[in-house]
Image (cartoon, rainbow, N blue to C red):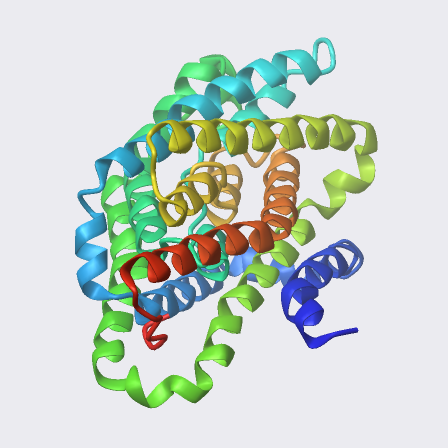
Length: 344
């Protein structure tokens, strides 16, 4: 087996292998979930690495790239919930009160905190745009996630599962979490880049592997949390799997069509397609455990959607990489210049 094949597909192979590990030995994953402090630390570490790898001037530039950012936000908070609601009506067992709420918990989440950035980076896409989309969707989750859940789930069901409490996020706590887990690590990464970028050239390939290892940890934790539900509700899990697969494929197709219609570059299209079709797992696990812990299916669509998005989007990486490298080579030839490497 060639080194190129291993470098491309080791992550996908590890992703598939981690599933039975999480189902068979969920102890560590449950501990990480219940402790509560580990997941934010790993998210912060991943975004710190993302900040270290990104050009500051391009990051500022992408913050006003509304033609790309707005479609991503619409996909995450409009298209995904509407499609998930329709799919729930189709696949939910008759008279089952838990299927639709579980599906909507997943669909109401922000874009992925980690994998969209990591996969965009692996694909040679616009990683700065992917980060801006991630920051935007995760900032809006404070308001939009509760709103979507309140609009799509029977209020009586919400009160029953939340012990009679209204579904409200602790706003200041969530803002502080965003600052600590997202903004500070990125800022720290940018600061460290200024000092150490030139001296880390030899170890950059190793640094880039770390986010992928953290993603594997998230998948393991998610499957550990869902182990009981998946084992005792195989039929329900099958329904959720089909619904999650269709939802992700629909979002991939929608973002591909919209980004193409907007005539975005392939680097930008890569970021839009990946960022606009992925959902975060850690925040979803938090909301399920905090507000809907009595829903017996809560973790199932979260982990199944997350798994499917990682498998499919990892398989798409070589295709995106080919598109981006072809465009880059054509651009170099057009302007009579050569790639300088360096800042990748």
